[in-house]
Length: 462
Image (cartoon, rainbow, N blue to C red; front, side, top):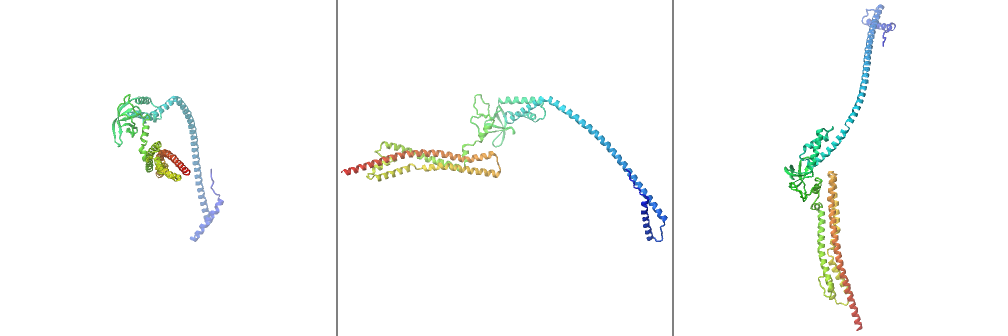
């Protein structure tokens, strides 16, 4: 693209003329002696016009050179774009071909490794089961190499090799053989004090370990054993077991022995009851002692009353009925009403003597469950306060605290049931003796009334 910047002389002449006039004015002002002539002005104008034409010619050459450079750059860029488009097309075609080849290869690989993939899955599953068995079983003692090999098979991301398959088979075979044998061996045993010593122990198949202290708990992570806190009655002594020997084996591999150790004893349960539990036990003991003493007293009185019924004519002061009969023989007043009141008073005194201590036993029987409930409520409050302070929401901790809190309720019910039974038995004995006394007393009053009426009739007849 060409740009014409050459100006016409007719437009440039006035400008040159004005410049000349300005120069002339300046010359006149500075040097008044010099005068500008028309020829000089024309020369100046021609010179200015030539300079301007040269300047425009230079600018035109620069524009042409810039245009040529830009056209060359445009051509180079067009060529580069064409080359890149060709390369892109070639790469796209290559990518498509590679995709097709990869799909064919994957299909061929899937067909070739179909059965091997299933074998790999079975091998890994079997290896995981064996590794889990080895981590908890005592049969893995001394088989560290097999454990490492099986662990490599489980962690592998590729198909197992032939040596690994043979090693897995040998590990299974060794596990089966050891599970059916008993063997004396040396292992590290950790004592209760924390000291670890090398001792001779008996391995009974894949079930358990034992030494002179009894059954041992095996920790595969530490490669050491520790004796259980609670041992069964029939325990081994660390030597080979005879064929006809009787043992108590934990086929759950220590779970039952752990639960046996965690099960609290009777004294521990009573200690968990705290002060409230001790108070309940004290009330039960006192109530049972009162019931025992009163029961022996009532049993003796009942036997003496039955003996007194056989010989009414010979009253004895050692039983309630004998004392009532003594009142009848000692009182000869003809007033029947007065005699009836004296007999009623004697019966009430005997009843009070027979019921001595029964109200206290009833009170203890009613108070024990209330104290048990009080202990449970206070124990629950302490449990939830502990959870609030330490933020422990473990169900085992909560269950343990609630179990300790419920001990007082159990103790209260245990104390209330025998006390209620003793109270009912004693009330039955008292009721039986009182019925006998009341019947005999009513009979004596009736007999005295008949005697008084007969005496009045005799007196009237006389």
